[in-house]
Image (cartoon, rainbow, N blue to C red):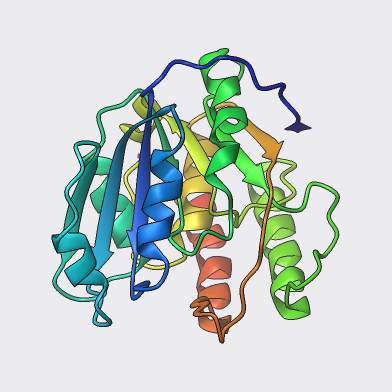
Length: 241
């Protein structure tokens, strides 16, 4: 279900933010700054996924008590970066933040409120709660999202409006029961299927979204969509261990 929560005071420093990052030399600094502005953020784990455009230099020279940088020597993908980032977290709540700032860190409060209130174990920040394309979004991406979300819902029994959202927030203890295997964007359906099969309570919250273009550096492509289809079937049909 999709809910809207009124912002009230939240515990400071209760949230760990994992930022997978690849070739974001223009965006990584403002992204981290925006994240650190949020009082709920206690730790920021930036995973440099083999960047070659100067992003690594920025991160090597960054010094902040709440920021930890982890680096891959080669580009391994978003899933691999999320896996590395999750292992470095210690806060009770964890959220994934894409470094392109398509989604706004000021939404963290409403994302983690259901976790703190104990009404959800996992919260997805839905970009399309009304299931309509947003201005500036590629039609191909919107239609692919709708298809993958519906396929995922059929496999999991959930009723999500945006399975592919980058904003996925978790109670940290949930993550101890999920072993990430995907290295690229297949991590999105993988997390969804595994959270559903684990019996965790999954809720959606409306969040803001500012889509960017391939000219702006958007990296997901049709091969990632095909892999997502494969992952939905792979993880939903696999025997429970």
